[in-house]
Structure formats: structure tokens, C-alpha cells
Length: 502
Image 1 (tube, helix red, strand yellow):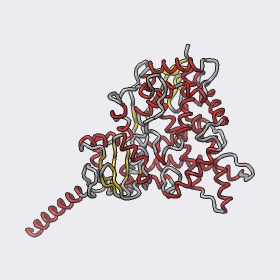
Image 2 (cartoon, rainbow, N blue to C red; image 1 turned 45 degrees about the horizontal axis):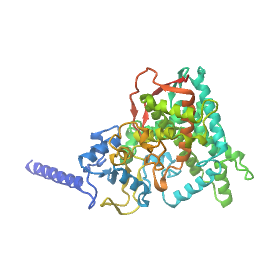
Image 3 (tube, one colour; image 1 turned 30 degrees about the horizontal axis):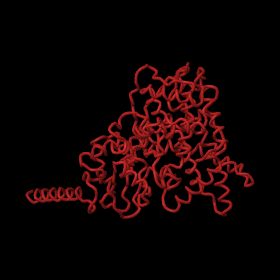
Image 4 (cartoon, one colour; image 1 turned 180 degrees about the vertical axis):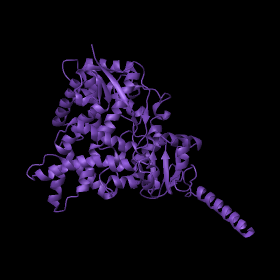
């Protein structure tokens, strides 16, 4: 009995010593931060600070360790979070940090492989991105296009008609009565149809597109930018797949891919190399030209990666934007005065008017700044051993630029970064500042490919709606942000009242 007790004490002491060493073990000159524990590493400490919002947990840890560059461990792998605007921009623009992370969710999304545009890196990513952008540009993506603008104008006219009439039965899920609509759901159809014009030269039923967008929303709400616990311990998908977001990765992502399979398969059946109707045709034609088998999965995931941001990123950016207009009615009045002055009421605003509406443009920039939809960006992976801010960053470290804190950096935005103030993007004469310091679209070689497309879409939707309507709260009170966490943040349920202007 004495021997057994002695061995038990010895084992306990050795275990404690091992765990202590494990917790304190860090690469030499690694940034300061919390220790690591078994299974999830420093993720335990992040959950302790804020189990819902990873960016707020990191922000708290950064303040505790009094650092703008936080070193920690997600599982057994090293990770670095940067907070200042300067460091965030450096991480986003340096080639050493251009890689992507690999995880069970990303591979499940890619049908077992790393496919598409968002989550791949290296020469394959460069080639796929270059090819897709070059040929999508031919169909109006990322540039001025009369065809795309006319199509979006037709979609906007339908939006305006929808807002002005009583809802049909099939629209009761997004409309509670004349003018009371659910944001951004009532915009999902037009937003997806506009990008699908370029990808697939087709227009789809709004109800079907709303279902697709909601599946995408559920998918991005099922995790966070860290990859969450399931990426560190993939076996959790067998124990509690719903709780850890794996079910959504399978079911909701599968819903999106099923829709896109129908689109791609229709193109394969009707393809003619004599006339390429859209990007999908070009991709199929390139495979034939090179004499190689079509990479069906890569085409499918590429189309998904260009379609997905339109309803999720643009739609939910506008959802937050309209809340800020409701809570800051003086801003909405100034925008409407600018629209009346530049356009009047006899015609609809168009892209040519954008340069003459600096205050409206500034208000959109300010919305992107004050509430970072994607507060930690899409995680980067360090491609080689390097240094940042004097600290050593090992190869394969996960890099997380905290856009949330960068957009609150007082050295860039002044002493009132928590206030919604479009004027910060204007000079003393009311002209739009040429330099836009917001990082919501990223920076460097991984700058969001759809930035131009998104900004044009947001300008046209906002200017056309505010020309004819005033946005209000349905209950007449300021809107309290009820935010749902995820890779992108979103509002739980955002009903707005759209009243015709006098």
C-alpha cells in the first residue's frame, strides 16, 4: 500500500511538472500571451474571456498582456493576433503571411479537399485567382459595365416596387406589411442575381436564392475565425456535430453546392465552344483548350466563393448600415439632401453620380469601419520563419489581424472612434478623402476580389432606396444591436420600416 501511494504521488508530481512545462513552452522570442493547456491550447483562456466573440476575447487578452501583438496557441499550433492598425495592415500586405489555414471544416466544405479561392494558397491559388478575375472582368466584374449596371438597375426597380406595395403571400417571410421588411433578407435575391449574371448569365427565383443565402448564413454562424474547437480536436464531430458546427458544414454547405451543381450541370449540357455566355462557360472552355479533364470540384467551389460574399458580406454590411442610419437620423437627412441636390427625384441615381455624393460614400465607409463585419478577417498562415514587430513568428503560425481593434485605433481615427461620424472621411471642404484607411476588404495580394463590385452595389442600393424612402425603426425607438457571432457577425433579426418620402 505504501509503495502504491508513493508511486501515485510521484506520478502526480511528474504530471504537474509536465503540464507546467507544457503550458510555459513557447518558441524563443515569441510574442507575449497566455499559456497553453492540453487539447485546445490557449483557446481555453479565450473562452474564459468571451466565449461568444473571439475578437473581444483577444482584445481583452491583449490589454491584459499590454501588447499590440499577442502570441498564443490554438490547439498545439502557434497563433498570433495583432491589434493596431499599422500591424494589421502589415500582416495583410506581407507575402510571408499570405497562406491559408487547413482544417476539418474547410476540407468538409471543399468535399474533402482544399478547393476554390478563399481557402487555398501557393501557385495553384495564384493561377486560379488570376484566371478567374481576368475572365470575370470580361463580363463586368470589378469594372464599369453597362450590362451589369442595367441589370442591377432593373433589380433595384423591383426592390422599390416591392417596398411601395403590399407583400405577396410568398414574401410574408420578409415583409410584415407595406414598408416593414426584414434586412438583409429582402435584398438576398437581387444581390445574388447580380453576381450570378456574371458567373452563370442567369436570373433565379428570389425565394430559392433566399433559401441559399440563409444556408450560407447558418454555415458562417456555426464557427469563428479561429476555426473553433472542432478544428483543434476534429474528433468532436463524432460526439456533438450540431454543437460544434460540423452539421452546418455538411448540411448547409451541401444545400449551396446542390444549387450550384444544378447551375454547372446545365452549363455542361448546353455548352458550346463557339459562344461563351459567362464565367462558367469560360472555365469549361479552358479545360477543353488545355486538353485536360474538367476539375469539377474546383469550378463548383470557385463559383461558390464568388457568389457567397454577395448576400452575406454586402447584405449584412447594409443591414448594419441601415441600423446606423436609424440611430443617427441627422446622417440620413444629410444623405437625402445630397441625393436631392445631385440627382433630384426625376430619375434614379446611377454609378456616374457616385463621385458627386461624397457624404453618402463617407457614410458607407464609416459603417464598414465602426462595425467590422469580419472582425478577425479570414485567418492567414505564415509561409516561412520570419519576424514581426521584433518578435519571432515560426512557419505555419496562424495570423489573425484584429480588424475590429484596428478600426478603433485612436492614432488613425482620433479620440472618438466609437461614434458614427461620416465626416472623418471628408476633408474640410466636404470632399471625399482619397485614402481609405478601412481594412474591411483586406489589403495586399489577398484584397477582396469583389471590393469594386461590392462598393458599387452598396452605393446604388442605398442611393436609390434613400431617394424615395426614409428608414425608421418599426417601434419608433433606437435599434439595439442584437449581434450573432460567427465568421462574420450578423444581426439576429433586423426589421426596418421603410416610409415613402414626402
